[in-house]
Length: 270
Image (cartoon, rainbow, N blue to C red; front, side, top):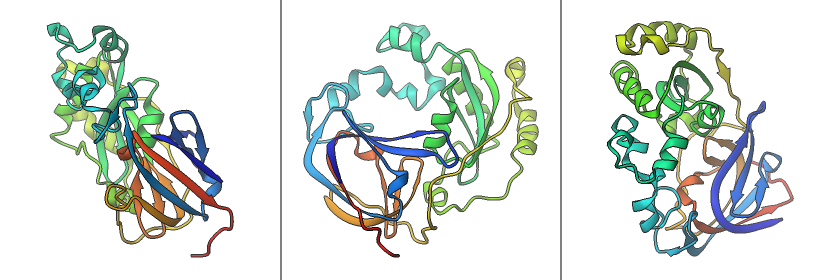
């Protein structure tokens, strides 16, 4: 079986474990059923913007050409630094997009992936966000009316808890045994006064399991720019990573690349 096209990353649905597919521009390849099989992954030497389709020599910010990287609101700096949102200053790259994506309710949450971390996500987008980060459990702790306010609370709490994931530890399953609900009670003590009215104390914790046959001991990354073709046995999927017997690959990193994936139907032994 073979599928090829412009890569758009991994897509998942919330199940036990999560159900994954690799998403191309027009097709999807379900992945869970191919655990234990050898995959051939090849970069065909072309990159295409996932927004406008323009041919590019390089992919920016997960699949965009340089003009789209510079002009689209989803690529503005305030997306990675929400507390610096400048919508109210009248300088949003696209006010209609900002109204739809930023001037809406957002959760600030606690999650455990490689360790405890604080983050934010649009309300009703949390399962996707947590799965993309490889979280094993997560819980919302506050609901804010805008992305900027959520970002301001996240910055305040990041003085007491990390806001980054160690992707190597996350992929190795090196997760500490923590009581997330007890940590929630502890972290809420640090919420500044101006955000006290937005706290969520009764939200249920969500747990995630990922499709994985076996653990990987040493993390080596496959780099399609340096090694445009590799074959390896697929042993797991977590976040935006395919985990192979001898290495891992961040599929979102190669969004916009023309990729072909071939599945060898005879399962390979370890």
